[in-house]
Length: 205
Image 1 (cartoon, rainbow, N blue to C red):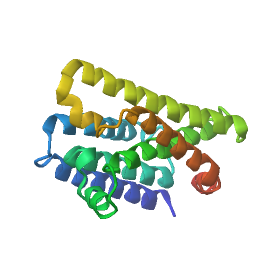
Image 2: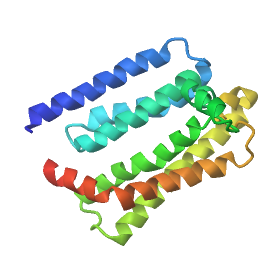
Image 3: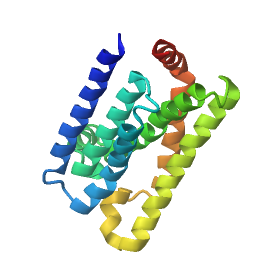
C-alpha cells in the first residue's frame, strides 16, 4: 500500500471523527459535561493534524485513536452513566451500574499504550524489552492519574455541576477502579498485542 492510499485511509478516519463529532454536539444530554468529555478528543485530533507531516503514526494506531475519540464523543453526548446500550446491558443482566465508563477507562490505558510505545520505538529512545514495557505502563498510569486529578479539580471548582462528568454512580471507589482499569488496559496492550504492533511498525518503515 503506497503513501497516497494510506493518506486516504487517514483522511477517512478524520471524516468519520467529524461526522461523529457533529452528531455528538447535537442536543447532548448535558452541555457542560459534553464540553468536558469531548475536549480531550478535540485537543488530541488537533495535535495529530498539526504533527501529521512531522510524525506520522501507523494506520493501526490512528485506527485505535479514532475508536478512543468515538468512545469519548459518545460518552459526551449521553454522559457515561446514561449510555443507552450499556443501560440495556445493565437492565438485562441486573447489574449495579452502567459500565460504559469502565470501558472508557480501559481504553484510556489500552490505546495510549500503543501511542507512547510507537513514539518510544520509532524515536529510538528505548529498545524493545522489559524497560520499554514498564515505561509504557507507567505513562498510561500517569495519564489516568492526571485525568482523575482534572476531574477532582473540576468538581472542586464547579461543585454539583460536575456530577455527570465524574460519573461515580455512587461508587466511593470509582477513582481507584478507573485507574485500575487503565492499568489493565495498558498491560493488555503491551503483553498481548505488542507483536501485532511491531509488524505494523515494520510495514510502515
